[in-house]
Image (cartoon, rainbow, N blue to C red; front, top):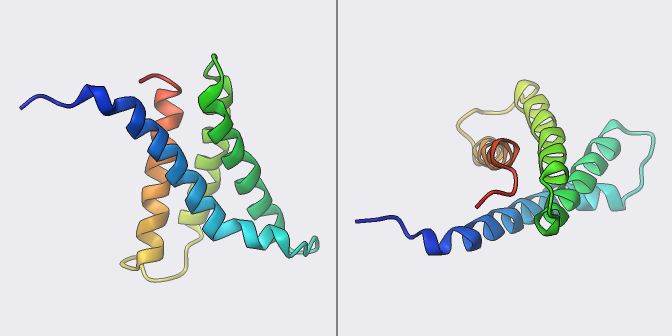
Length: 113
């Protein structure tokens, strides 16, 4: 059986939407609290800003916006993975790993379909 390459642009779009949804659920409300004296506010702000840029990068002709925003998001995810103190077999850690894998995919692939 051959792969369905016809649906490849749709899968890229859904991965970007999934990334935006993950960022919205995990970080958007931290930004709305506006506690500027806490590190979590700035960390969540970086996630929201570069997640939005990753979503916007889909409409750009060049790959620079996608690659740059996914690089920053990947570095943030690596920081979270290395400083994770919970159970490694939990749903939150696995979702963090999958988010990191999706961002790493966009870092390596850019806007290519």
